[in-house]
Amino acid sequence: MQEAEAELESTGLARTAKDLFAGAAGGVAQVLLGQPFDIVKVRLQTTSEYKNAADCAARIWKNEGPLAFYKGTLTPLIGIGACVSVQFGGFHAARRRFEAYNLKAHRPPTLSYTQYYLCGAIAGLSNTLLSAPIEHVRIRLQTQPHKPSTRLYSGPLDCIRKLSSPSAGGVTGGLYRGTSVTLLREAQAYGFWFLTFEYLMALEQRRLSTPRESIPPWKVALFGGLAGEALWVSSYPFDVVKSKLQSDRLGAAARYAGTADCFAQTWRAEGARGFWRGIGPTLLRAMPVSAGTFAV
Image (cartoon, rainbow, N blue to C red):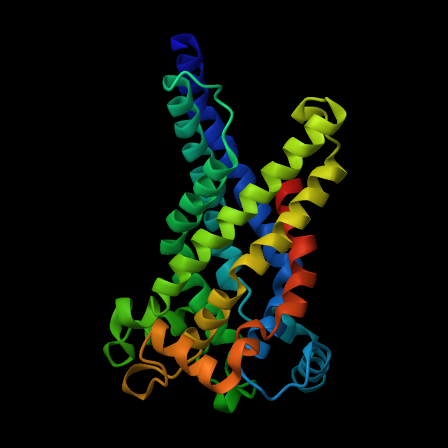
């Protein structure tokens, strides 16, 4: 047992570095593949002016041009590599802790599915410090008026400056607005993301009696895509509330007092359906984006 623990410890640093690099590469793929779907999702979540996803996409193309589908891309493109690196690094660091714990308890090091979920939740929570402001800036840029004369922000830096101003609530109340619901979303989403992927990989290993490394890349991508579907189905209502809070008016003019108030107002105004607006393009986006993240 001591030899096994020593081996886990000796390979930990190298594996963490590898996980961080893979996460960064996967994050860039995630943004480039998913951004057009994401802007449609956010528009549907935060306004009722569109009939459906197809109408939203068509009107963005007609009124704002094809480049509008990549509004707000710079901030997540710079930050998503760090976010996904933290996700994968946090997941594998937590996994190694559970493996060591299982060995000390005189059990096989292989994690239970509950432990896989907890590893994913830990990864999501550790990522929130980065993801909350990055996504807030992206949403502000995606939802601001298109005409230059009526734009609220000239770019990501101007957006960060204005969200951090005292009139907007400062860094904590402005830039980090929506962090509490982001914590809920990240824990639930990445708990199910990693759990689903590990479950499907283990199922395939048992089915074929083959080592994990022998599973072909296309199946790894497929399982990653299915994990992406599970991620969004399990956490989407939290994401809707987060988008509403992060596109709300700032400071004293804000419509929502906080996360609980946003949940309550959405329920009163739209019922359960209001928490699933935009789920269609989100699920379309999830498969290729998540498949690309795990395949890279």
